[in-house]
Length: 276
Image (tube, rainbow, N blue to C red; front, side, top):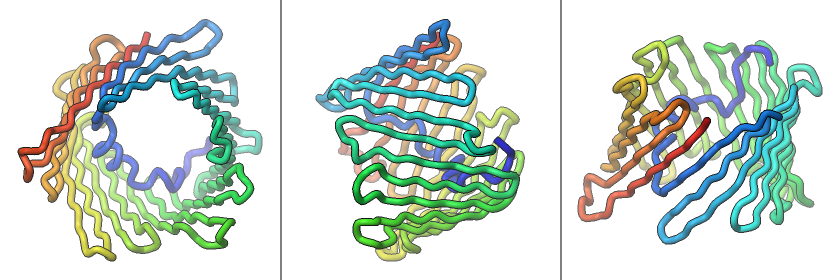
């Protein structure tokens, strides 16, 4: 793929990932193995409240073809087929699910040095259609996305955004939910590996006159341990401690609680992902 502005979904993603990724409220254990033929197998079990579930996933990459198949304990089967460069500088992704066929979709992505396009259509009788475009460079980009419901003939969403990226920082502004919300975020990296960072995000919802301001950050305690924290103006405080117990295998401990209602039970999560 050529280097360019990236997809519209990448706008604000760095700040969002730092504030949301690895903040768990359940207990998860997964084991991955790799065969000589290039197939990766991952077995996972999840316990959330009093409910436990599990799944087995297989992934295979050969040249420009990627296949991901997952089967869970509720007899759901999901498959992702991705093909790169069927058309030059493009990627085609098909998502299929059983027994819920109507949730499947077909997506086409196209990239060039100054533009990226994405179009997705649902695989059902009245398919929803999503479209996005981005213009710019790897350091400056602006774009928009829209969703169209063919069954009603109405736009279901339209969102616009802009982002400026530097080697040690990234600032983004997104106007979403049909113009009802505006979100601005800024992330600053404190080391070359981008493991230590500070982030701030503010969201304004015009219809309810509500503001949410969140600050957070990550700190590399050592080469194997990472600490993340976040706090918003509603009193929600969260923390994540992640440690590489052996090479590529991560133990993640997470907790969130309401500082304005200390009588509420905090949420705790733990994940152990073992990889060879």
